[in-house]
Length: 377
Image (cartoon, rainbow, N blue to C red):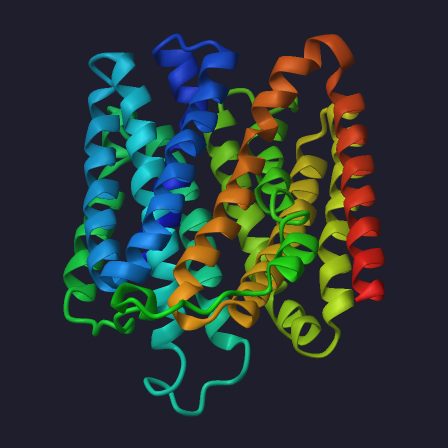
């Protein structure tokens, strides 16, 4: 289910070139549809987390996956009328948001005692991120390959997600519920969580979780030369490279989170700084190979930040608040997906290279601020 959620997000991103060329969407309209996904996702997260704590992870996650599946059908209708793309992307975000909130908590609890008595500390908290990243990597690449060589790309490219989501729903239907009735529902006071730690360590880093990768697979592929005729496949490769790099750094992320918490908080944004510096070079030289390497660096930063964020959330949230606090983290993280839209709006005034440099400076300031707060605590 988590893989299907990630797949639904990136299957659209690699089709942006097709929508521009075949349906006549402008650059700002195509990039804006990426941002519309976030407008649906954040309310889905903020509603899905409390509902999963109150009604159970299983019920909310299964319902959210149905919405996610329906959203793909609506996007397929966008071939006949482009206005269908807007509600399709909103529904994609809504379903994916609720699924991330409920599913992350469900995966975490199914990967912990008593379901897995010998689970290693921290492993459960990162599995949801791993499966979402796998969906990000595969969804964009598969849809791009279909769009490049198959007929009717804006329809057939969505068929794999329909099969994946349907199969995931059937497979997950028999999985057990993990959440008991919250104490607050019975009238007893609910346990809180360490809000100060969440506010100082998690929230400042969360937007960079997706600001970095979306620049890598949405912005950079449209700013390189030498890929004429292969731009769709190139964009699909970029959407696979970014989360693929995030998956590869997971062993390092696990070790840092387990042994060096402050280093784990600083390493992710430091890698993002390096990625934005390279991105400034890419948009100046427009070299496609270097752009893919830069996308990999940004993806590594994404993987480190995501692992740190989910591990922190699992550490500070009690079971009856886990889905709610997880949803807050995902909502703050997905706010970073507006980054490509901001770059598109401002690039005519400031230039893309300057904007990439500004991103590096902001990420560096965030890294320094979190490090200072961590030492004080």
